[in-house]
Image (cartoon, rainbow, N blue to C red):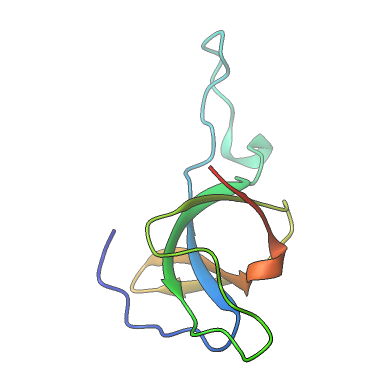
Length: 92
């Protein structure tokens, strides 16, 4: 995890998605065009929350989120997602 110079606002978090699965359990290689978007990742930055919303996730947590959740951003060549904490389904 590289140094990230982004401070999300309010109830937003920045997540580094886990790499997509490149092979199946039986060893078949999945081409890039057929790989599914990952639905888990590691939290790398969190906002300060709001008066109504206190954040429960913290930096370093591994989380599950929806397949199409968040907005994709690229910082220094690394892809991240920025989303509201309410778009996160679980901490694992």
